[in-house]
Image (cartoon, rainbow, N blue to C red; front, side, top):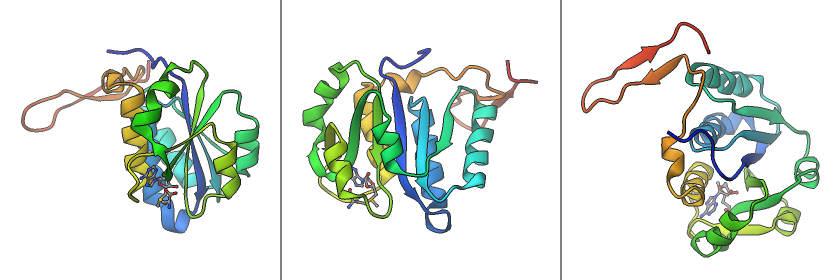
Length: 182
Ligand SMILES: C[S@@+](CC[C@H](N)C(=O)[O-])C[C@H]1O[C@@H](n2cnc3c(N)ncnc32)[C@H](O)[C@@H]1O
């Protein structure tokens, strides 16, 4: 098991719209947490039920993942003390940039778009990287990016304090429950 990832990553989801993005934003944040990010910000419309569902997942499945709402992207990117990686199909292929990103020790803010990404975000980012030049989804782009960044080590990440954990089996489902978060 890996206690924590070598690169500190915070994910930044731009422009959440509860009516249209509820599932995809939830899935993006679950992928961020499962694959090694420590924290996430989101902008757009503040969504208590999104925050509550992520909080519950963390309570049940462990770790210390945090989600925070911000009223505007400038506040998050402008205040970020580290480097900014923007995932966009218009960027440079991530396989060409990932080594450089990995070897940079500063904390990373990984920005993923929503409805419309303001043009200034491209200029404010240290790297604009494409996970192929094909349109797909924020979730697949983030998952592949983190997998490459961490070279697969995120697959062995430990989630301390879990109330629930899966006991892997070839067939069937087995869960272990713990009385309280430790
Ligand atoms: C519905 S997509 C919109 C695609 C958009 N035209 C773009 O700039 O990538 C929403 C978000 O998914 C991510 N995304 C989608 N396809 C991607 C790709 N091929 N490479 C990197 N990120 C991608 C980007 O963060 C994008 O803002």
